[in-house]
Amino acid sequence: MSALIYQPDANAMQSGRAKSSEWVLKFESDSHRTIDALTGWTGSDDTGSQVQMKFDTCARAERYAKRHGIEYTIIKKNKPQRQSKSYSANFATDRRQSWTH
Image 1 (cartoon, rainbow, N blue to C red):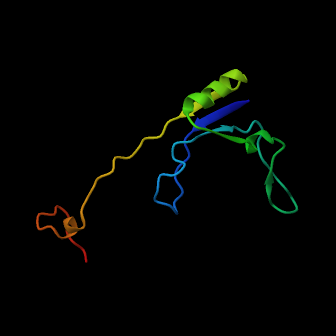
Image 2 (image 1 turned 45 degrees about the vertical axis):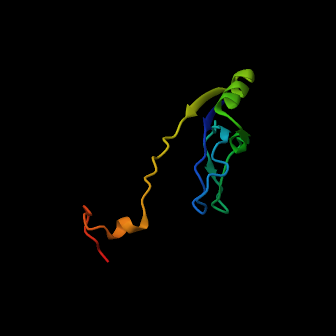
Image 3 (image 1 turned 90 degrees about the horizontal axis):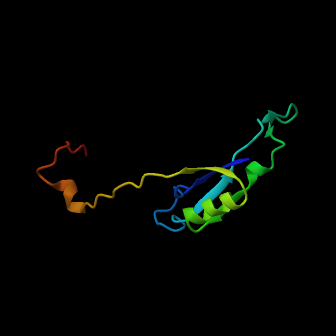
């Protein structure tokens, strides 16, 4: 069984950085999903794909995977650089873009 180790994205409904430093170890599905003929829902016999484990650091998640013989892939995300702007920059006379209001 193989797993992915990654940092989950922030919730779109919050602007803070809470829980942004935790890492998730998520098992990949070994079998393909099937569609139930009666309800149309998708299902699978693989319950391992439902397991998600949270760790404080990437190193701890990696150590856990090595200790239990789990093949893993680490996905690192790029952190965007924040540009600090003031409100008055919206009304600057030397703007490069046209003001559309």
